[in-house]
Structures are given as structure tokens and as C-alpha cells.
Length: 275
Image (cartoon, rainbow, N blue to C red; front, side, top):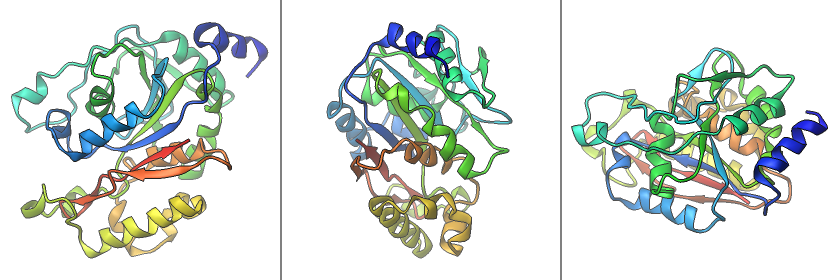
């Protein structure tokens, strides 16, 4: 990144109080239209931080070969799911995009290659949670994709390059789930808060402890941690947004948890605030 890139960020957004970083356990798409303790937690998180100039979201649902950033003026609302009520498909979240922020994000990540995207939009990993936080849809939102060809350490290191955005009023959100195994859902307890298989309980407890004591390398090296995390993270798509969030933490910053519950046996809604 050169001095011109830094000047562009300053010109477009200006210096602000350093923004926190969030990881949001987004759970079922139905959380977008239901009223429950988790969406209340999303709203509360927004109320406790300064209103951002813009939002950069890393969603589990934009999983690509290579890294892309949305760069359109008006991102479409993507309904990337099936089998849900029409009311969910009717939801639109008409937040503007920010081509300027997209270009600056790509510049910050250089020399890692990032391509501007004009086709994607906002998937439900982004809009289903952000609509509760900022219902007026008046804050520009862009998304950064997750390159599925890269290991967790790569994503952790890549995230560090985004830290400058926090000083310009940009709220960075990772959206996924730490425990996310749809094949082992306990359908009898799909809406039961606190319901978790033994391995899910262990995964939640261990990852929470690592989060709170700063043992991030254990989280990055999750594949080495035992069977409980192999069940909790059968595929890394929903887990890697957490890695981005942790990569943005400075040593002296506080880390706290909210929405910290298991549901349906094999899902956790655990969310993280840094700063």
C-alpha cells in the first residue's frame, strides 16, 4: 500500500474512533425475519458501537476460487437458499455499495490478488444479520469473498492488512458459525436454545476458552485439535469468517462473547466482539 492509497481512504471516510470488529453467528436464514434472542443480540451489538461509515462483510456464503470484493453501486439482495417461506424471499435489503471502498480494500490487500466483482451482491450471510443492526439500509455495504483454496493461516494473515479500515469508521463483520454441521442437526430440537450434542458442547467450550485467553493458533489449527472440532467444522466455509475477525485483533484489545448458545444439536450462535 502506498501513500496515495492512504490518502484515498482519508479523503473518502476521514479519521474516526477505531471501530470494533464483529463475528456474528448467523444461524438459519429464518433469523432474518424472526424475533428471537439472537436478533436482539445483533441489534444490541449495533447500539453499543459507533455508527459506521461503511461495512465490510466476510460471509460464509461467498466461497470462491480466488479473492473478490463487491464493487457495484447498488448490490442486489441474494436469496441463496431454498425451501423457506415466501416471506423470506420477499425480503430486500437495499443498502448501497461502495466502489471506492472496494478499490481501497483491494489496495490494502496488495500484493495478494483481489478482483473487483460486479455480479454478486449481498448474500444472506450479510443481509440477514445486518438488516437487524441497521434496518434503514443507509450504510454502504461491501463483501469480501473467502478463497477456498487457501489454508486458515492465510486468511488470518490477510485480515491483518485490513486493520487500517477500522480507523476510517469501517465496521468489519465476519458472518458464519463456529459449530456448523447441518448433516447432524437434531431436528427435534432445531429451535431449542442450549441443545447440543456432546461433541458440540465440547467444541463450544474449547473454542470459547481459546478465544477468551487469546490462544488463536489453536483456533487457526483447528484440524489438529481432535474429533470434536472435526464434527463441529466438517467444512471450513462457516468457520473461516471467525479467522478473519481474529486476525484483526490488536494485542491490547478486549474480546467478548455474546449470543453464546448452541441450538439444534450441531449449531452454535456464538458471536464475538473485539474492541
